[in-house]
Image (cartoon, rainbow, N blue to C red; front, side, top):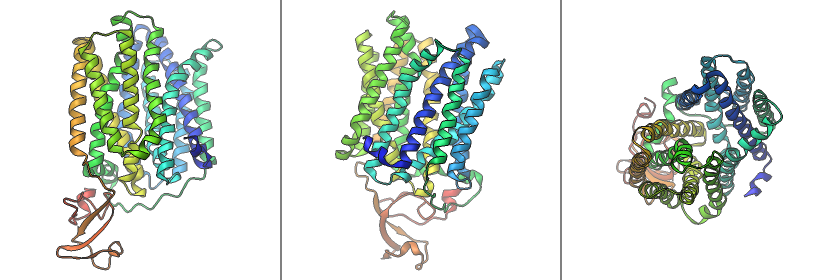
Length: 454
């Protein structure tokens, strides 16, 4: 897997990602302590509101930024967002009221909502080979898991030497280092965008692409499966460990560590597995595994070994669903449309979390942990079934289709032959100006570009 790091550009971008993640992890710990200083016993409410603001920024900002992605040089956008995040982190230690925290968190997460999809869309262009890109996806998953495990430990070590305000300084350094690495990398020139229309049409293009592509509609359903299971883990682990199993605070970290360990183990195995199996053959069984584990957990008595086992399995299955997602997106969008497609994935997937996070908390607090797990299991099962229905078992990249509205001398028809209803040819099919709808029975009728662009 590490062989992909031989690519100089990718190595610098991956290093930038790791450093920025470490800085974000330090900021998460520091923000919790800052909230406690400002609100005391109301710190949970402050953090809960900050989390909601984060999700709203993710859902709303990413598509808007994608509308301008073709007008802003990619390196300038990435560096600008890193500098914005560094500036916000620099100001955070000096706030003295809760509303200021909310404003700064919105700015910070809005910058992340612009940075992350753009970064994700750059990697498949840097690594065009499918095997290299798969390894990069697994490395990215490992980076996220390692950050969740080691950033709290790093923060704890630093807090023995300095006050928590200095953790924000570490965040600033992380984002500045990320910006410097991006500047030093030679990024490929993006392909020209053929889309037309106003800002609204461009901002919604990624979502339209999702709705029009069967495998991406299935991916959205799988995102909801992951969010249902993940919400149970991230929202309710502390209550399960402390109140249900009556264990110490340190065991909360162990339980979350089991989830991270499962995710990392799956990420390490996936590159080899995906050489033998299709994405569908990996992702759909993993989704039903998430549902099954959560269902069994809801229906059986809880114990500490069972919790650790369940959380490790949930982590592994989550990784098996999320890691190949980038391959599906790359396969389903033209190179010029990758920023819009990744922005849509970023926005829509976080919309799923925006639904399941509060649901997991409210149900656990109001109706009990068993009810919460049962409802989340039902949501996950329904979503997995929808994904199974939407994703065709035969899902070739190249599809034959008919154009009925293009002139015969259109360059796109260079390899086409005449058909009773127009011109027929086959190629790697993605939604774009010339292909606004998915072929039905391998035949795509030509409709006006306005059907795609509003």
